[in-house]
Image (cartoon, rainbow, N blue to C red; front, side):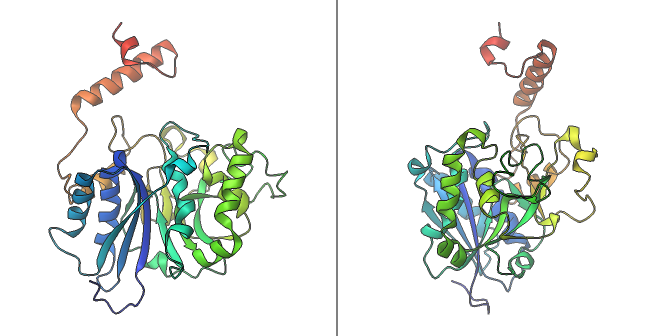
Length: 318
């Protein structure tokens, strides 16, 4: 039960399937640990197939060893079948990414605002500061994506057709403060879904493209530190990413690339934040096995030598 003086909780919404149970626990634990004790937190997890055992481990990670009195969690089943026809742009994505578009319909009408977070994030500071940011009569608040603008590679190929200026900023959809009243009134979710279906052939980043196409003039920018996106190793320090400031803090670290801390081959120094909070969960002490690391690097070395992009275990053992 909530005991804090604030009437409305900070509504934090995440989405995950069973494969993301462990990083989901880390994301939730990091947010709860850093939030002021006098603020109320309610986590809503839109889930697809998360086992009862993993749900209990996530809840135990949140509530123990020190039960935070003003934190709670609820689970909502995602109707993934309804999203099955939408394009999955990258191998590390699945239809659950589109479930953020279901939030206005899944939550009660009296829930007017949420903070949506991808499950591959780690919060290092109090998200109440982000939550309290003025919405400026916009449908959402977000952080500019590391690609920069809609005309950049990886942006919107049809920006001219949409009447969007080439230098219009392109935002990342992994951290969003959403005004649900506006979303419902303007039918934003359906408009984004319609766009992603109609423009399937040119979709590069799933609903993130649709969100940028529909809301290009209806979003407010917040500091990059609130969605500090991992920059691919070979691009760090390059002019392509010169707009990204490395000096503004990392309030929320977002592992946007396929190189994730819980997978073999991750060498980003920021992964230490992930393991710091992992060790506060029911997965404490877990690490990628040395055998998996060895196999990953061997496979990578052989692929590089053969000049191929993919290589199966069977091919490797021939």
